[in-house]
Length: 352
View 1: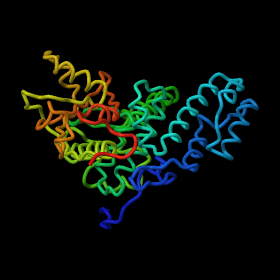
View 2: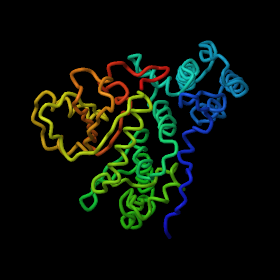
View 3: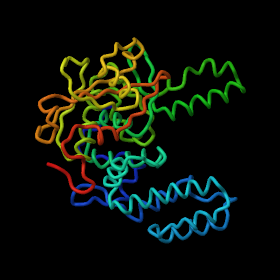
View 4: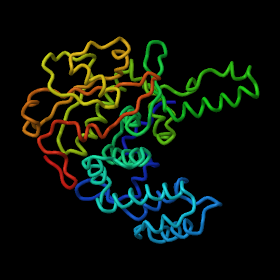
C-alpha cells in the first residue's frame, strides 16, 4: 500500500484540544469556555463516587459556567485532601489562562515569573496545544513525530546501531503488561520480546500512517540514523522558537560542535543543560556524558539586531541529552527563556 498523494491539510493531535480554542488575529489561541470544559472532563477533576457534596457542587457549578470564580472557601470545604490539592492546582491554572487571554501568553507569563508552581501535567498540556498551533498546516510526519518529544517523555534504545525513541508511557505500560503476564505464563512472556519491539519504526514507507494514529504515540523515531528525523526535530525547534518569541530562526542538526569561540548554548533538557555547563566551564567530559548527548543543533537568528551584542554573528548551540536510564524529557521552556534575545518574549505581541 502506498502513501496517499493528496496535499490537503491533514488533522493531527486532536487530543491537544486546539479545535476548542479560537485563533486570535495575532495567531495565538484564545481561551474559550469549551476548552475549559474539556479540562473539567479529565479524570483528575471529575468527582469520584465517594466525592463530598462540596466537591460535587463546585464541579456542577463549573460545568454550568467554566469561568465562574473558584474561591479558596470552595476548596477548603472539600473533605478529601487530594481533592483539595487537585482543585487548587486547577484554580491556579484556570485563572492563569483566563487572565492571560491566550494559551501562549499564559505560557510566557508562567515562565517569566520566576517560580513555576504548576504540575508538569499542565505544562505538558500547554506545550501540546501551543505546538499544535505552531505546526498548523504541517504535512511532514517526521516533523510531527519529532514534535512529540516536546510534551511526552521518550525512552531511548539501541537497535542495529540506531538510536530509537519510543513513547515512555507506552513502554512502561507494555512493561507492566509483561510483568502481569509473567505470573500467568513465564514461557509466553519469554517469547514475547522486549517492550516496544512490536512498535513501528518510522521510515519513508510507513510515515504516511502517522496521520491515522498521531494521538496514539505509537511510532518509534529513529533519531540516530534517519536524517529526516533529526531534520524534523530541527524544524519543530524553529517553529516553537519563532511562534513564542516572534524572532525568525534557522535550526540545523550537526554531528559535532566545531566552534572554539562559542558564545551561547541552550540545554533542551536537564541533561543537555548539565553537559553544556560542563563544556562551558572547560571540564573534560567523561565517556558516559559524551554518549548522553543524543542530538546537537545550530541555531541562527535571521535578524541579528534582536540578539545580545556578545552573541551577534555567532550561532546558538542546542544540546539534547538523556538520563543514565535512557530517558529523554525535553524542557521546551528553555528555548523561551534561554535564547540570547535583547528583549524577552512579550506576553502580548511579538518582535519582528
